[in-house]
Image 1 (cartoon, rainbow, N blue to C red):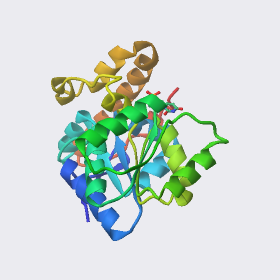
Image 2: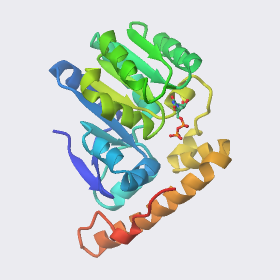
Image 3: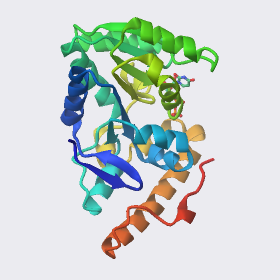
Length: 263
Ligand code: UDP
């Protein structure tokens, strides 16, 4: 079993990218079903005010930390996570694994031209990838059942959804049984990055934990407030957790009044 740690009230599995790919391979081979969650600071904070999202993530077969600050915090709390595992990289890994296991892949998310570009790019990278469905992520609540049915009928074993958080998690949660896929993952805005529509932060910014700043500078009006709230909350909660740790209180959590709803 994969070792895991509770950090700020969320389970994180101590795996690196290769370990996550291995977990996916074993799941496909075993005939079992499970979903992977990539949790960054913003999602970790969102979970505190969104019980459905928290439930979905808690129920994941594998939870990985998608952000350098989470890795630093894990080390300071002596609950070390080996490395950051980002959604964009996992897309490539999972497509490789599914292709080696001869499993059909369904891509859903972003606009139709972007998701088609993603399928093309991934096919160039993994020539034997079998894309059994390539669909945009824009549909109404009423249409979501038909979308789930189409995924089921495609016979896909791996479903990659890129519709933003918590939209993608809600879809997977609402339709998990009928989807009948073996492996699912929500990867937020990763399709935009793979298709080259949005830029990824340079490696040095990722390494020093400033990927959020890069993203924010691309869309400041939409993201400044969000990151200000989630980052401040994260710093505050981490401070409490570290204080508890160094005082030997064995705390992973924080005082309940620190839970502020996100706006
Ligand atoms: N997206 C989607 N369906 C929607 C809304 C968004 O497929 O109804 C896609 C969007 O095109 C983008 C990704 O989800 O590729 C992430 O969107 P956004 O940046 O708005 O999500 P956030 O970062 O705010 O969670």
